[in-house]
Image (cartoon, rainbow, N blue to C red):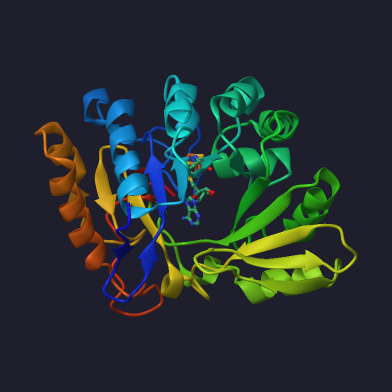
Length: 328
Ligand code: SAM
Ligand code: SF4
């Protein structure tokens, strides 16, 4: 160890997001098309051994402190606890982002394998709307999945809500009440232009200020702040009933303190969610490159990270991949 991964703006990187699959058992409207998504053939995915090698390099050589597994839907990849068990041997905070639909069956195995934290996506508490947004009628399973995660001792359990104008923005207060009742932190995410259909418009974004004002008018809130490198701004309920988070990726992005890199399911390293270029780590791994060679390529890829995304500016170019293909 001893080296650090620093970009040309002086940002030190510590957080690795690993997508374990591009597949998903949902088709959320803001993420995937209803049909026609071409999945990667199995041989194109990094194996668990390849993922472990890359993760180890980031942790042991560059002092990474946090690894989050995502996708697509990570729980559709076979034997996920095997990967968790391998990665849990590294000295990192190990987390998972999931749609929660399989957690009734999996939460305990994941916890036993060494997972600590979990984020569960849930965009509506109304069954019909949930089915329309995810294109799968599974609200009851996801709610049971949240309970299963709590019962398995995964902590903290956070619930992620993508807020879309005219779709679920009338449920902000319901979600705040849900979080208070269940003892989970609900985090409201501003809708980003990473939907597969390319249908995103600025008018569909419900911004941080509106989210906080709406919830605060019913449950008064106090700002807690945003720790360096954290995407969420935190607000606590003034009566001590817990807290909420808002991820203002569009109206107030955290690019200035971003400490993340992302590895796609087929082994492409991305230095930003909105990056237009990638480093082909899989080719390096499969042609037998040494850790030094791979490390040098990673340093180069991080060094060239841009200052921030340019959503809302005329020069903004959408990445050709959707959120499910990048690994959110
Ligand atoms: N399938 C898992 C899930 O849904 O949690 C993990 C992958 S998903 C791509 C990761 C996160 O990205 C989820 O919280 C999801 O709500 C969020 N997401 C997907 N598309 C988004 C978009 N266009 N804008 C904002 N967040 C998005
Ligand atoms: Fe699947 Fe997650 Fe994308 Fe929904 S947000 S389609 S669950 S990858």
